[in-house]
Length: 457
Image 1 (cartoon, rainbow, N blue to C red):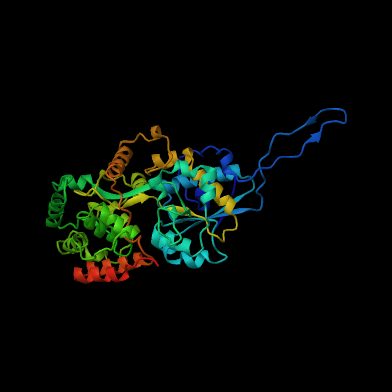
Image 2 (image 1 turned 90 degrees about the vertical axis):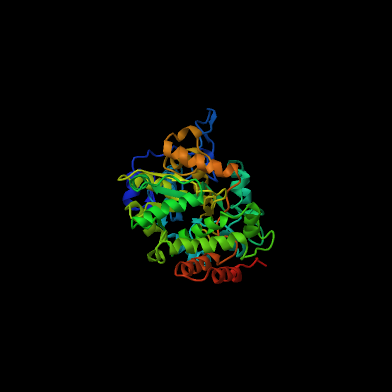
């Protein structure tokens, strides 16, 4: 992938392949926290009989040093735009440095992280999925740098509230919520319903208030020959629908037991049984299509944008992209009807591999992404920033996004994600939800999940 020497303009970044945002001005240089070192020139005598003058400090010279950065956010998404601006600031505040940005697919990092991070090809900083089965596992394998002292020194522990810190910290067993900092999040996220307002109006469907009215609306679309919900069986979206249906009958104690092993989980309890049977009902009633069993998340998003489906159930990470790309129809969002719980948490995290060649540069870059200028860009682009100026977001749609998120937070409604508890559970859920989509008995589906769900030793 190409290198980038700075400072550069946003247009130049776009030309060279860095994720960026057209029309956004470069964010200003971040103050001293952007660099872990400083350099000054030694005092010199102005003349043999004159006073000794100390020159003003100069910026360190980073010539010959390259920050290798990996992430999988869309160029038009909120995080992609914010982080492209952060690259600008990094280059402006690190004269002589280069940035080697490599765009990776979510699945590419998910499947190969352990192998890559244990090699000489490890990047300096990488976006990675948070949770016990992902970042927690890598921390126990010694593949991630302990950032605890850095988080304190740079004030990240003050920027991120305790609830947001949950996915940044892991115990010696890789369980989130306590222990050492092995990652840093820069945003929040949650799962909700996107809907095509024009299609709802055309077919006489109103925004539902509970699961029954939601299904009645989907029946109207089915009657008109339209599959209501876009999803993706090959990746995370389908399993998140199963989890949302499970959460319709669950409470906070269920989430705590399931995610942190506080108490044993009965995979045939009322909540999980409802989730599995209701998901299959959605298949048999035509709310979801078997044609989506092998669909990827990207294909799902493109299909919804093309108005092939009126509904998409997924996360806030799509919001900025849809704001940028959807212009042919009116759209809106609502929380999953009837639920007080929804998949969600702090966002994915920056991690610094233990084999990073430029850990100090990685820490500088992370710090820039947490500062208000980059955070404001994220907020205006449709993200859920953790350190933005509240006055920076004025768009009504973005206010709706943030208000719904605050409603979830008020009810302690963030239920994390179904694949988090144990290593390898993401793949278990993908394959078994695909089986459920293809007609597998719900009881056998739950048996398969129970067999793979094991508390870390």
